[in-house]
Amino acid sequence: MKKLILILLFTLTVTNCDKTKETPLPLPAAAEPSARLHNSQGIEYSNKGKYLEALIRFTQASVADSTTGEIYFNLGLMQHLKGNHEIAKNFFKQARRFADGNKKILESKLIEKHLGP
Image (cartoon, rainbow, N blue to C red; front, side, top):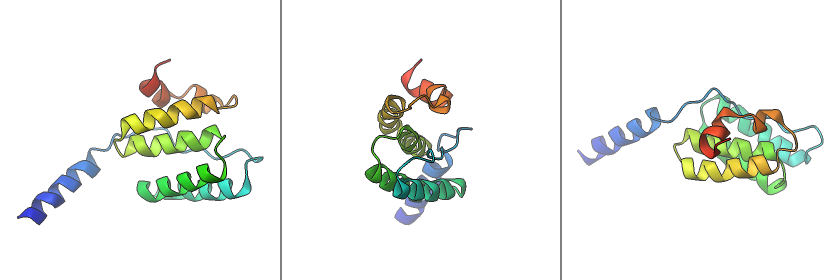
């Protein structure tokens, strides 16, 4: 019976993830090469709905390059999709900070939802 309850709770958690039309962002061509590789892998996992794996890859990208807004946006997006909105909010703050003029970050409705205009 305990296993059944755990399975039901897990299913509810997964199916209640907040959806969004926004998708992970690629890195600029001038970004650190290993960060670009990890970020690209994260995008592939995200497109397959494998958000935990994507989150791991985006985290690896952030270790390689901690000053790229797109990486923080992608980390925030994964946390948002997992329902971790406070964590997402912190990543979105960093995304704005390091946006470097990227309009997809600066005009993101998802970021605005978390942080306000």
